[in-house]
Length: 142
Figure 1 (cartoon, rainbow, N blue to C red):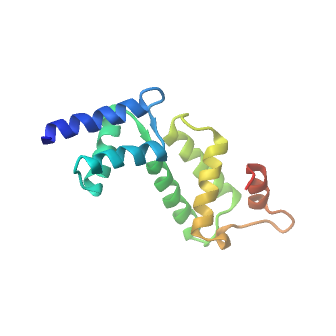
Figure 2: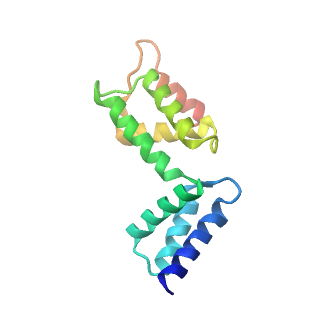
């Protein structure tokens, strides 16, 4: 296959998966990247192409939102080393803007909780008599 044919196929696969909601979740992203690898495209080139095509077509990629959340968790916890409830709410507000209504608040909160836990459980600032993070995790069923 020529480069043009590969690019057309790649764009076609992205459009097929994101046609209804303009959103590429992690499973769809994995499928698209697997197809690209089968076509002989290197994985790093496929990831770059995926991001470029999604930006051009107005699609949102879940992994890009997850990366943004991880960066914000790191920067929010950077000063004091811990994320407080206000910082969590700020991260949630930014994620809402980035996701453009493609996921609900519960899913976004779960993504933020995962990012905080990946960064380390000691990064959560709790109050004297309540632990907002534990309560949130319980509400999310985690």
